[in-house]
Image: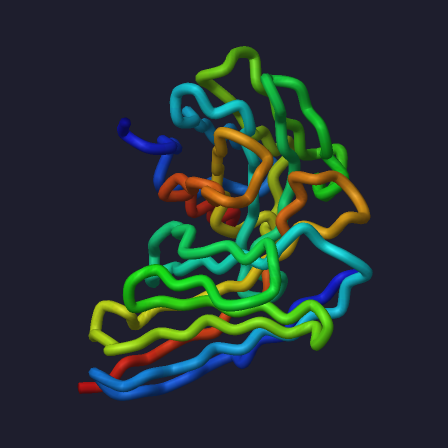
Length: 115
Length: 112
């Protein structure tokens, strides 16, 4: 398996623009997570899905953020409009079960810079 | 709320043993996980302690004591490639089961 695949790897955009981050989880994994990592706040869970259904979106900062999972092999995280404080590395992760014995598998991340 | 405390930095020499501590304040959680992250890379799962005690995986071991609200990651026979950040993480009983909360991480520098 190619692991969790995220695109793009890097994104530089101007404030006010829409940004869409993409993720392909590992085939067969029922759980998909979106995390954000910054120096100040560390790794934070934004939202996670189980069988394509959003379970917990309490970490989504505000209405500018939205996430979808239209099928088992694809998810998007959208920011509209983007702001400089959204600059961070966004990770997607997936897991087979919610059981933590095997851990979560993270993608390589998308480094977002909003100028 | 929940909080995890780790030292921000640790330095050790190649071949040595290093222990990275994690103390936490949470009302209850499923278990303690450890992740490794190299600079510019993705977090990678290392270990999980559901029960108190020591779990060993090769050169790495992880320990949990719920009564002491404490856990640690032990790295033996340190290698240069072990230079990375290490995060402890818990899933609290309070809230959704999938919400894995991470500590701020410990940056380990291995010197020759």
